[in-house]
Length: 155
Image 1 (cartoon, rainbow, N blue to C red):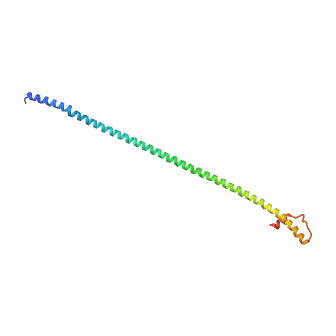
Image 2: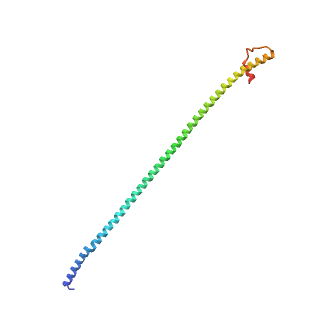
Image 3: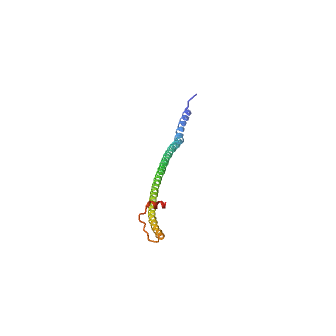
């Protein structure tokens, strides 16, 4: 194999061609590919970050919702217990007032009964005097009347 000048010219032409192709074609193409790869990597990273943030927000919202539901449940339970307690207290107060009214009514009835019996006793005495006057044809006064006798007659 012989080396002549065409071999060196071809080799130099090939090297110059490779250098020019690298500068004109391969370097910009590599740059575009690298930029595209970087864009895709950034988009994937951003998507992962957004997914993590969304999951964290969802978790926080669920925790807040659960806490709110529990707080609401406690408030409702407390209100129900208070309502029961207040209802029991009102019931007891109403019963107490009813007992007082019953006692007052009994006392009032007892007083009225006693007053009516006293009035009836005096009327019985007056009637007895009137009957005695009519029967005896003279005015008769009944003095020492035994109240026990009148009580037995009235009962």
